Length: 114
Length: 109
Image (cartoon, each protein chain N blue to C red):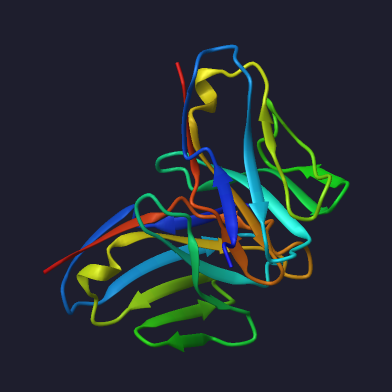
């Protein structure tokens, strides 16, 4: 019930392509779904987050799509660039509780080829 | 602002040794956390604190201890280091958004 399943484990995309990373959760009490971006040797940093009252949130080239009935959410990176090469983590929790008690997916290593 | 600062960045320990990973934040956040990150396994919560003097266990607390005497500092203590504690450790703090430090890479040999 506490798991967040993330796929794929790794992803190679050509420059200008679309990168798509998917996550699924089980706990219907989750109401906060952030994505974190981590570059090698650095800590994760919040990229974009969504609450379940909307089905999509867009910030620049990054979009979260959320499907409450399927308990799935995904990150789309449009016009992917080599600078987007990083590891991406989805996460979830009950925002009413501690923000940091997030359940993380296992991560997706994205490589964008020039 | 420095944000969340962790020291040391790298450390090699022998089995059975003890050490403390230091974490300090200058954002006046009440919430602080320690995570460990293992390859292909995501981030696992070790301990967290909701304020000075208050700490609680996360998902993987065994072999670790914490204290929170001030809002700024949240050290993580490893007693009797074991090879299974080889990992990258991240400290984080939050008000709404979670802010991570740059990590401490620990190897136990």
